[in-house]
Length: 329
Image (cartoon, rainbow, N blue to C red):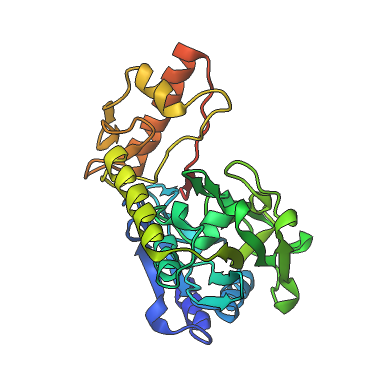
């Protein structure tokens, strides 16, 4: 009954077609596993996001904010409270004389933005074209590949700042934020713009790991280029990914790269490639990926993650770190 009231409150600002009760989270994660969310709401702009957060506060509900769901694992019993899916999808390209200023909403998928930039003859974003995620997640984790990283092209990022009195938040590794306590009232005074130097970019990390912000949009500075050369580079990177990475459901690289070792190589050398627990498997194509072979549960994946970490530590002494964020119960 309470969640019916929550949904009714949400409809004051958000269309009913974007509000769901008892919604399966496996529909929103690249692992294709996970239990149900009590309520899931898709928000298209800042007004809707603030209303959803304030509704959570009013009804004393926990909040989980997700993007594309490409780096999370939701447990089999699902997520309590309200899941907010960010779908800020606007792209604005401001063409200057020598470069372009590109503003993209946090929910813009990297592949879509890469195609828009290609169409406009703008280069410097090819490295991100094949990463399965959104701009918000890419900024959050300082996503990178093939020699490029977000830190090299981001000018500034607009976000909602969760102040001390409403910060009960845990921000995940890529794009998904779990607020473990309902926030206090959020309004436009919470909106801030952080310059590149304030975002503390490092390897797969940024200031957004510190539980203080929800990314709304980011502005990039990119040079012009030759369309054919841009397309060739994108094709080269995408073909490389297809050759090296599995095509089964996963959340990308399961573990972080070590400072002095390649994690996938360690896992392979430990004889774990192809190892299975239930429907979860260490990919036979790339040992850095744990995949869902078709009938995995979240528990299968978690048990396999723990087993891999245990064996690698026993055989090499290395404590490999998880890159995937585990949410729910």
